[in-house]
Length: 95
Image 1 (cartoon, helix red, strand yellow):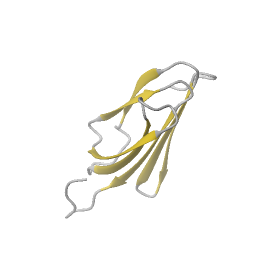
Image 2: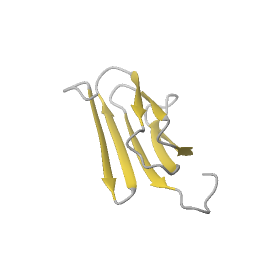
Image 3: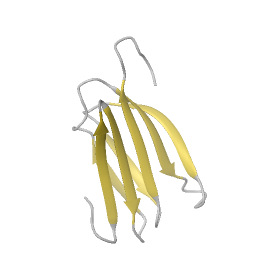
Image 4: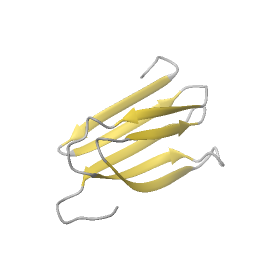
């Protein structure tokens, strides 16, 4: 998925928590990150995305994801994305 001068994408794990980072090059694009690397439990996702309406701002989102899904990431020129994915524990519900 990464390409010199075009896109850099990373996924790293610390314990059970995953971190996803994407840095974009000069062209706007949308990418899709497959989440099959996650464990079997649902994950609580904290996502920081480019704000398409304001090039100097980001949007913070909370969602729930599973290994069967993927993340669609819209990137502006020179933009980026950060995601922190934490497994939900047994009695935890919702986001």
